Image 1 (cartoon, one colour):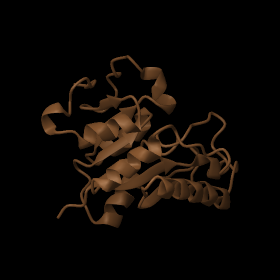
Image 2 (spheres, helix red, strand yellow; image 1 turned 90 degrees about the horizontal axis):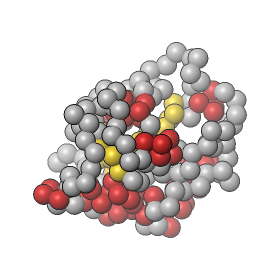
Image 3 (cartoon, one colour; image 1 turned 45 degrees about the vertical axis):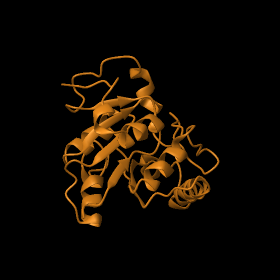
Image 4 (cartoon, one colour; image 1 turned 135 degrees about the vertical axis):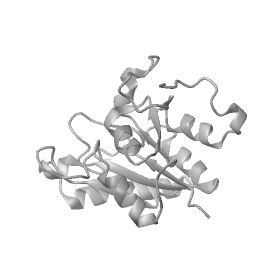
Length: 195
């Protein structure tokens, strides 16, 4: 049986984003309803993994211990909400470093496909920025934009033409999960498609 998998961005999708980077566990603050949304996915049989650029590591703004503390907090709060994230895949590189894992390149998604032994074509991925969706689209993922984090500025607008074709927009992670768990005939009501 095919693994039911959803790939989420972290900053701006699960937790508050910051122009100054999220650098510590204290600065890691879950977005309203995001952890409960992940728990709903889990309870419906979906595995959830995170794919996140963490260039603050490469820039020297925080270290791996601080990143681990952020993720420990995320896992603990998620467990309290009745959910879990199976794994966190992150790119530690700064933009100046040559790597294949910094979104919009697809390296993190390729790592996820290898870890789970599956083709990611048709797997749903959610992010708050164009680069999140470009990385997923490069491996055939179905792309979803949330209007939280960087995606907030696109609220109420038709998505720009450079977004991957078929991208759906949702107010937040909770609304995305409602869409995922909806019956097929009601699943696409009131969504913004890019054609």
